[in-house]
Length: 599
Ligand SMILES: *[C@@H]1O[C@H](CO)[C@@H](O)[C@H](O)[C@H]1NC(C)=O
Ligand SMILES: *[C@@H]1O[C@H](CO)[C@@H](O)[C@H](O)[C@H]1NC(C)=O
Ligand SMILES: [Ca+2]
Image (cartoon, rainbow, N blue to C red; front, side, top):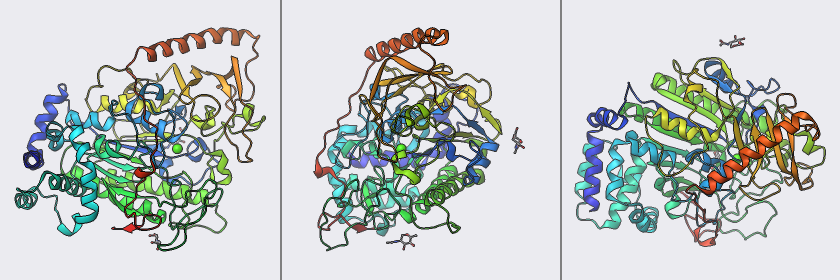
């Protein structure tokens, strides 16, 4: 059976050039020309004010500013949640955490991840023909079969098999020859082969290169969530020690040296298990050298875009950067003028990486590629000078009482993020869009641009924003719900409501500021309502007795009741947040800190 699957895979690869127009025509139905390549770049913990085009005080984003002048810049664009895992889960599903089940972050020892009952953007595009050669795989190996074989595969790959030594070439004929020799191999080895092939075969069209943070154990790994190829870290890079610890607050020590003594636990630092870097199912570096990670990403992106463009099939590339999350990389890869703060150096490094991705797109597939850049949530105020800028969105009402108004909160500083769209000839150049949009919209919009269909039997919180992107409309959301992401209140609860230019808070406080204060946890049965057009800093709520407040309040209550009813009637998922230390990624359990190095 395994051999048959490989054969079909190879036939798909071999004839992909012929298959592509056919699949394109059949599946798309209404194909009018080539379907675009999609590149989604997600920055981590980047502030609205960290983009120079948004905020003149910032002078570190020359490449992004250029992209803004050649594309569309969104000034009222929102995270789907104000912390990592829920925001990513919403990007990949188009649904809020109350529907997709992901309401807070996963841990290094999390058994679960983004629920398997949810369809990811990668799965939808993969099935719509974005990956012609791999469609067959879905029929021949069910997810359950893949999952059952997963432990064998990782074990064999890490212990017995070195894909690089085998020098597997992505050229189909050579692959065929190599694979014929393996005709009698066991099913187990077939899976190993598949791992090797996927590791080498950058031709595959759905590509994730990223901080995943949606579960790494078993079937939650990105390779089983629609990504043919995966290269990146499984969660935030402060969730594991490294030899290049960079800047953090508090500062964290390096990993213990091989054979060195075990250390006592240190507050707010992971000191024992090293941060892993994955290529598909295999850990290729542990601990990750954070100083060279940006360079590795740039190299992988360039390789992928080159090969995917040559294959003449449309591709999806999801790049979720480690920047600007702490720790901030310590090695100056770029000219680093004396006195420049680490955060600014990190911002320049990120900007340069995005510039390299865009240059590669421009030189290979410019007219056919849509790039969407956005942030996952606002700056992590608790990290003080290692946190980004919220620009004018200071959340004054909150900060006056103590506590943060950035990451983890639903204040604008935590929620409003930089966002750019770039597609020469399609997205108008040098345009600023005031449309109210969200990371939630990426899923329905990309599905529409790809000519695919939304999964059935579930509701979406995002909307298809392609008319806005293509300059045909200014209409974004009228209403947007901001979920709790770890500040006061319950995970996932819709605690703030955006209604046109108004925003209502039902609970405030509970997120740590730089000075360590949390801010009092306050419930507001009569919500605080701000007019964001007149009060971007959210300093003075509308007076409760006033006519404006009285007019807005019933509308807010109505839309909130409606969405809660809609969620109650929807197909919802529940994430497994249980933990087991045994699933902590470790390439070599005999080494203290789990050390190994294969690239
Ligand atoms: C980490 O990468 C940097 C940049 O490539 C390099 O200069 C440094 O030697 C590396 N450190 C380790 C410990 O390998
Ligand atoms: C973009 O628009 C701004 C303001 O409308 C203008 O000053 C600037 O020259 C434009 N840039 C380009 C590259 O067209
Ligand atoms: Ca984040």
